[in-house]
Image (cartoon, rainbow, N blue to C red):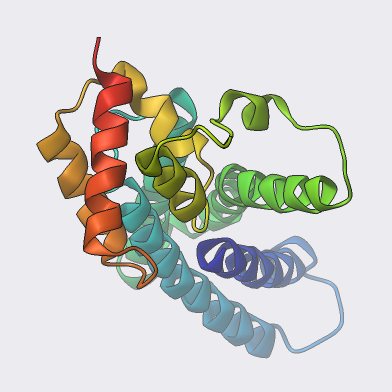
Amino acid sequence: MVVTVVSLAMLLIGLVAVLLAYEVLGNPGGSGDKKKLLLIHRFFGYGFAAVYLLVLAGMALRFAWIAEFSPTASVHAAIALAVGVLLALKVLMVRRFRKFTANFFAIGTTIFALSCAMVILTAGGEIGRAIAGIQADRGAEPTEEDAAAPSLSSKSPPSERAFVTLCAQCHSLQTPLLAMHYTKTEEQWTATVERMRAKTETISEADGRAVAEYLAGLASP
């Protein structure tokens, strides 16, 4: 959720920067001090770049343990990298290649549009899961994702209970289940779970072993 909040803040900063650029470059006859507006635009532009780097770092931490990207994750990563490349090119033009000033308008708009797509892919799932959780609390019908995830019963083994109750505290249970087509050994799942344990204090070492054992069992043919 932290990455989602930071991503939305990045969009807000980017929107201000784009609107200021539109006012300076697209409305030359408008009122206001253009030099001052341009300075404010640059401030928000560099602020956008700084927050983008934070979002990129958060994405890297999320993707670090994924053995094989889903199509959505691949598109997400590609868009994020494209935004980074365009940002770097724009900074180079501003600092070094000023003859390309005429391209700033198009590049800035493209960066903002791609950022919107990137944030939708990031925040859309988080917001959707939050809404689904609220609906579940109100007795709403379970979603397809909920139906595909394991549910607990009185006969559920301790390893399954550990997986369902602990892993769902930080992310959807579909996150590891979608990786079932990629067969991992128990040792590999243990390494994955250890990375998850480093992010929270709620999973004990014993519970981590139980979760790794359970996931390895699911992945076994």
